[in-house]
Image 1: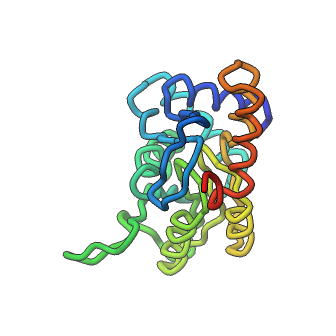
Image 2 (image 1 turned 30 degrees about the vertical axis):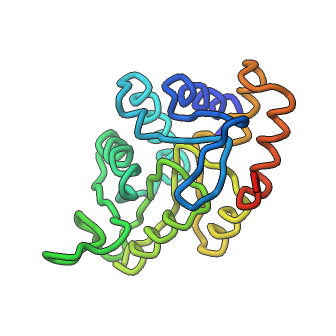
Length: 211
């Protein structure tokens, strides 16, 4: 992704408040981490023009980066609608991956039809530590699919995620990222210079920040 398009996507996320920046009053994540940023890309689904823009950007990224994609996979839950939109636009089969196998019926973790050896691109809404994204990759591989890459809407750019994806041998692309968001927020005067250094400090050691 070019820096220009990363900033354009960041602007759309801010516009619909899918991303909120609050260095002075941090959010608490499910993991217990304190964070000056909160990202909820489900909000994009409620704004048709922004949703359409994000869908086009995701499709372009899949088309250009992973032209051999035979199946699109969405990661439950927030990756499912975006993945389905991409698969529909590109006229490719769609599957989705649950966080864990169903406890009844067939006990499926993957819903839809995946043939062994098919090349799969995984669609995520957000990459933070990469843990849930890579669990989905493992499930696809265990079912015989070949994961050729992942595309996400936003990425916090944590070192731990970069290392985890490298170790798993999964290339990934994100439409926008934390650095682009911070640069845009600074340009627009949404955050002050002091807050910028707070935001940058958080990215370096998110598990220690605010303690």
